Image 1 (cartoon, rainbow, N blue to C red):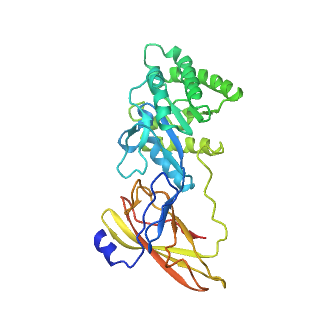
Image 2: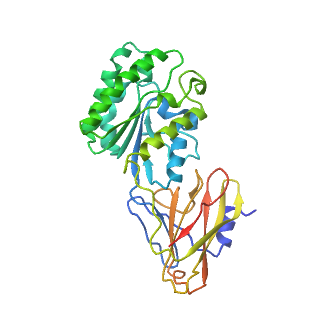
Image 3: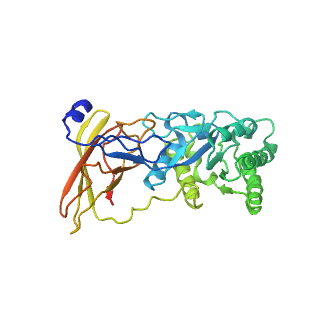
Length: 340
C-alpha cells in the first residue's frame, strides 16, 4: 500500500492545486490542471449556546454541513469559535456554552461586522429558562433579533424555538409560545425573519442530561434546519447546476489507500463524433476529506477540475486521465463525477 509521497511521485498525473478563497479559480503553471472550489460560498453563522457548539461531536453543524454539501450547496460556516471532530470540514460557529440571550446580545454586533453572514441560525434561550427571569426571555429575544436585523438587514435570520429541557418543560413551552408571534410579526413587517419550530424535532429521550442532544438528537435538529433553509431561496445558495454543453463523461475510481488518505484517478472520455477543446469535471469528496495539494484554504465538498493545457483537446472516442491525493478520515470515495 503506497504512502502519499510514493503515490504522488509514481502517478503520471496532473497535480491538482486549489484556488485561494479570494478567487473562484487560480490557473497553475503550464502542464497542470486546476481545482476550483465553488466561488463565493454563502456565509452561514450558527449562533447560540452550547446546543449550537455541540460538544466534541460538532452538534447539529456536523450533519447540517453534510446535508448541504450533498445537496450541492456552497456554504461556509462562520464565527469566532471552531469545535467538533477534526475530520469535520467546517467547524466555525458562534455557539457559546452557558450563554444567555443577553450575553449573545452584548456581542452579536461585533460578530456580524466581522463575519458578515448571509444567513444566521439562532437557537438561544435555554440558559434563560433556569435563570432569574425566564418570563422576560421572549422580550430579550425580540430585542436581540431586532439588533441582528439592524446590523445585517439583508441577512436571512432563522430563529428557532428551543428544544425541550427535561426538568423545565412547562417553562420552555411558555417561552416558545411567546416568541413565535413576536417573530412572525417581524416577518409580516417585511423583515427577513423565519420561524423554525425546533421543539418537536428532538424528543426528551435524545437528551441524555435532559438539556443537550445526543448524536441522534443533533441529526434531527440538522434535518429541521436543512428543511427550513431549503424553503428560503438564496439562504444557502442554489444547487449547482450541470454545466452547459455536457458532451463528455467522467469515471472516477480510488486507486490506492493508506491510513488517513487515498489516491484517485478520473478518466475523461469524449463519446461524441465532435472533437472537444476543453472540459471541466465536477465531483464531491467524502465528508472530512480535502485535496492534499493546495494553498490559501481547503478543498472539500464540491470540487471542479478543469483540464490542463496538454489534455484538454480530445478527439472523438479519445480519453485522458487526471489524478489526485485526498487526506482525511473515513472511507475513501469519490462522488459521482460529471463532465462538461
